[in-house]
Image 1 (cartoon, rainbow, N blue to C red):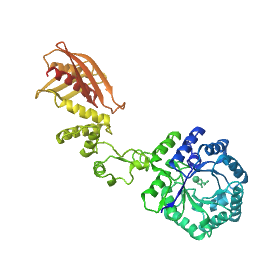
Image 2 (cartoon, rainbow, N blue to C red):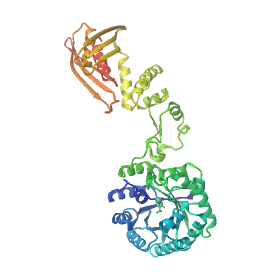
Image 3 (cartoon, rainbow, N blue to C red):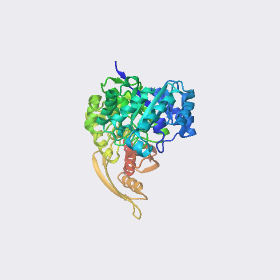
Length: 498
Ligand code: KIV
Ligand code: ZN
């Protein structure tokens, strides 16, 4: 049976206090409810004495959610503790999180005090908090840089005073994983009453070690992890919930959490949206590219067996499926797979032809999406049956130039070339094409549209022509809109020969 690791989420306290992450009350409640659904064990709702907004957020979150413990932060100061207790009065399971700095820096340069005084103040704060609530967590601020011997004395004293959880924050994100792991191990081995409380990790990411340090902590005996969604938080952020939870789930550490992992992605997106803080594309677990494969070798491997290049099933974190991003580096296997999903099963010959054209377009566009593929396949299918093909096209145009086009068409297998000038490049092309036919052709309608709206988009051209009192439609598509226009015209004229 796995040991349970409690997940303490501080997105709404440590996460929210970072610049730009501020939320209004409605948004905080929405996130708190999402965290409850996600299965977090504890929600830190705010620092009640710091502002009326933080006080109110602890009150409202206490009313809005029922399963998780609701926690309010305080300093080791009586007034802070009284205000936190007041803010927590509606919580079904309230917790006061009090504490004080224990490192040399904090004791001497922040609090202008000495170790004995700090120890006494810590103990007094726990005892006072205990007079309001049963569940009291104590944090040893800057524990990452605190001497282990002194830290063990503080931890032992606050547990004796009634602390149910003792938090060992790496406040400045200074520790290396082996150091942080050894710190937790030291406390597990040297604090005589450690069995009466749970040790918590609370790691910051200043050196990018927050997840590694947290995992080192739980491997060595910590049983609560303090985390935020997407790793939001002070400076470089806090430990990312999704990373720790999935590391615990992916490895056989004899540990488990209560997190309902398929809710991870939607919770992450909610936090990104409400905090207006999008995660980078390559962010572990929740980044846009976390399950996207773009190189041909990886795509081929993933299509043969997902596990070849994925250690997590995307569905397990609420991502519908891995994505095979079609780029100029993709191979035929990826193209065939995508076309199969779109309902096109091509012969090897058709695939080869489509792949050639795909590479041509992929060199121009960075990414090829489904719309592009449909156009590509549709275009190929139509073009291959035509009696007339656009063989080559050259256009000169621009400011102070007379638009001039030279067009070569393959008409029933014979290549013929003509040039013409016009009002604009398309007019010049159409005039050159018309010269290649004896029948009189009149352009009735011309429509050009983009697909997705980027400057690298396909241009789709629809035309209607009149020839000997009959009307014909043509369609052309290309990233080059003049070529698309020529293709559409040629498509329509071909129909006059059918
Ligand atoms: O990083 C830290 O030390 C904290 C404490 C207040 C728990 O956020
Ligand atoms: Zn913190």
